[in-house]
Length: 427
Ligand SMILES: Cc1cc2nc3c(=O)[nH]c(=O)nc-3n(C[C@H](O)[C@H](O)[C@H](O)COP(=O)(O)OP(=O)(O)OC[C@H]3O[C@@H](n4cnc5c(N)ncnc54)[C@H](O)[C@@H]3O)c2cc1C
Image (cartoon, rainbow, N blue to C red; front, side, top):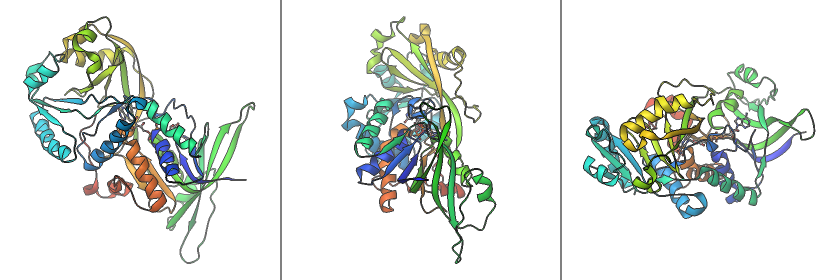
């Protein structure tokens, strides 16, 4: 027999957890979250760089990040929020000109972004002592910074649980049952859990669907078998991150999101005089013109680089020393002599969930009366988590976004290129 949830959130990463908390905070009862692994071993929410900034080039991304940073600031110590700014270096005159244009937009939204002449960059960031001639300018956004994403997700979860949300761990979403009514006859068809995709796709005359049940498989403690749960729900929200297609495929929708591997390396600078000479722990995020980004992490430096030719796929392999030697170290040492003698400690890979315009997807899923989604936030999910959770919860509860209007982010935009929310300030 099926169990019942009023709102079933599929995926308990930082986005699903934030939505769960925001729903419960609005007084919605019967909210449940299912996830195959709430520890998040493969969840991007546990594998990211912890950078948070509102300095984007698209208004909806600026607003969602700004609202989230304002929220982080309220709980600064609890969330490990450090308002140390983002320094963004430019070598391409065309891009620099665009950055100056976008700075005007950013500052109308209260970001106080500074445009720095190269001489000012060297004065304020003496660490950057190499290849200075190629820099044409930089922006510095003092209100951006760094956060502890694990602490943020843990807070959303503990608050959600306090308000009655149930989190089900080790539940792998394996099937979906939908019903569709067609025309005046109101035919309702239950679909097998086993091969849902094929059956649904076989009936193109269907017009409106309802997601009825999610089938999960999960291990039962003290038993050698996997058990199944059928969870009937009134509302379902797809928060599967880079796995959003798992659910969408089961209801016959093609996802536009591609999972793409992103790697980060932890760097030991203790053998150098970097820490003492440059006051490493006062630095925020530095984004080099090469695409390399780095920031201090305790007495280490965390550095990432998104290799442009990375093929899409669910790839979590970290390339190790070769990633450090080929991608990270040359770019660091090109910009700062202090990194000459730094060492590779370790690193990891996680997934960006990348859409064609590199902005996230949030809203109601057209063609279904009770299906919503919030995923595909590329490298931006932590810094948009609060605004997305709050606004999507309002949409579910009242039919309207609230706080930040996320309507530019609905999936229908991909049917019309003029509605794409193309985000270029991307690392
Ligand atoms: C290397 C790297 C660096 C990043 N740096 C930053 C940064 O500095 N700042 C920032 O804001 N963002 C950053 N991001 C992006 C950010 O981490 C993500 O946007 C965000 O974590 C996405 O959260 P999510 O909840 O949508 O997805 P996830 O955290 O991936 O959660 C999805 C959940 O779905 C579950 N799941 C998957 N399949 C199933 C299934 N079949 N059944 C049940 N559960 C399932 C998973 O277990 C997982 O818990 C970075 C990402 C990476 C990879």
